[in-house]
Image (cartoon, rainbow, N blue to C red; front, side, top):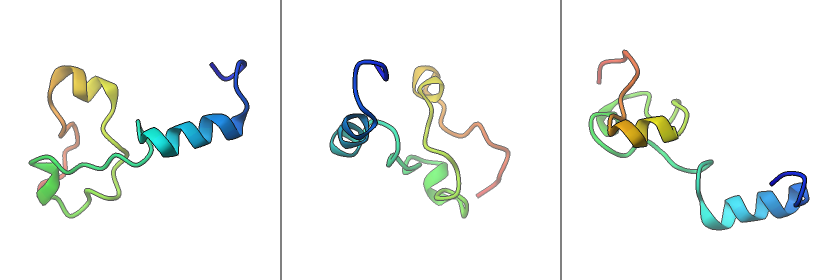
Length: 59
């Protein structure tokens, strides 16, 4: 995909469709965690297994 499109096209597509960069941890238990906005966005792996708190931080 990168070879087929320019960086600006890929950036615009991401900002328009919001597929990864701006997703935040708004589901429980992360929604109650002090560090929810410091964590990276949920990964595809987390979506696949249905578990969104792979960290060890306690809310």
